[in-house]
Amino acid sequence: RGGRGGGGGGRGGDAPQHALFSGADPLPYADASFDAVLCHGCLPYVSHPVALLAELFRVLKPSGVALLSFAGDPPVDRASDFDRRHATQAWLQLPDAAEALYMSSSFFHYSAGWGSLRLEELHVEARSLFLLTAFKPKGSELLRKRALQAVERSRGSGGRRG
Image (cartoon, rainbow, N blue to C red; front, side, top):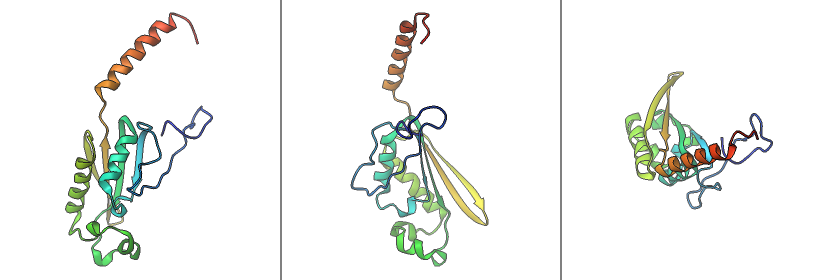
């Protein structure tokens, strides 16, 4: 859910946002716009994964979460035509899932100041699906602002109802 979107207010007021990432331009969203971002199956096809993860970090709110998923390690001889045409050479040359996970975690490490990184492996019809969940840490500045806002709200309400 983002801070922009679907209008209206009420339940479901924030519409999902979609964007294409070329690596040359930043994502078309302001800093700290989203509570969460989801990239399903895209990592093997991204030419600039470190830049993508840096952009995801930028658009996430503090304490936000990024979830990236990708299929396990199909041998290159079983890769689909789509994979052979569109996946990056780095992904196509990986010998196994362990290397894919190492490379993916390195992208997170070198892209931004992510907090923790969690890995899960799901087995679906004899294939693996890897889920990487990264958390953007809270900043001390954000905590200070929230405390000041709470004090202002408590002073401003003074028993009045809005």
